[in-house]
Length: 142
Image (cartoon, rainbow, N blue to C red; front, side, top):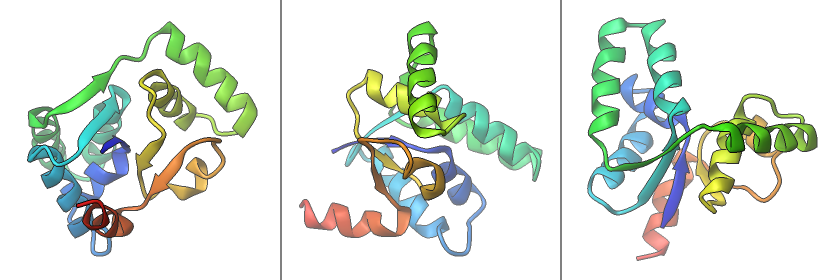
């Protein structure tokens, strides 16, 4: 199973979020153990560092090192991705996440694991798996 992993999954795990933290840690464990094929653009570690550094720079440093220790397929953000993101943005009204969506399209991915349903529900041809739904999805595919 191949998934694009949104930044909030790493944020919620690093912060031990009271609702999503445990589920997000399971997703990261499954990436580490090769149970899922994970993809991220280079925007994800940038966002991770930025969001966590506002809360705790030490946690941000640890989370970034942990992120880069994972077997994640990294997607470059280049001119093609940015031009494609404009078409997604114009179609959906979604601004920043259109760059992530263009990265997904570049790799032929159609499923994202995220809790950000507000933005992602507006982008066509993308299936959303929420962290709390992830365990049931992976159990049903075994």
